[in-house]
Image (cartoon, rainbow, N blue to C red):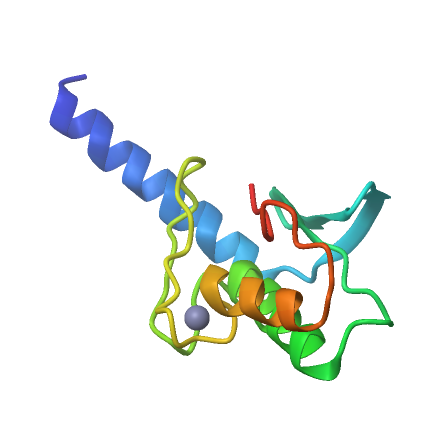
Length: 119
Ligand SMILES: [Zn+2]
């Protein structure tokens, strides 16, 4: 198989996997340290725990980020295609962006650490 055919095959596999993720219902499989581990169809994601003590703005933003991750797209236009090393690039004004979440966490006095992680 030449390089172009291999890339086409890999792109197709990623699209099929992304469709399976979008069609699946997320299942929380483990909570460890400050992360929740979710199985969504063929994929596993870790997302920050959303604590009851967080202010509503921060909780909603973390929920929006989780939702965007599971759907593969965000209303701000951020998308991802299931590549392992890819991160969703939310626009800075999006509530689910790294910048917004860090600001909200800081305003709330919540330990943000490195900020929300996704794998
Ligand atoms: Zn976004």
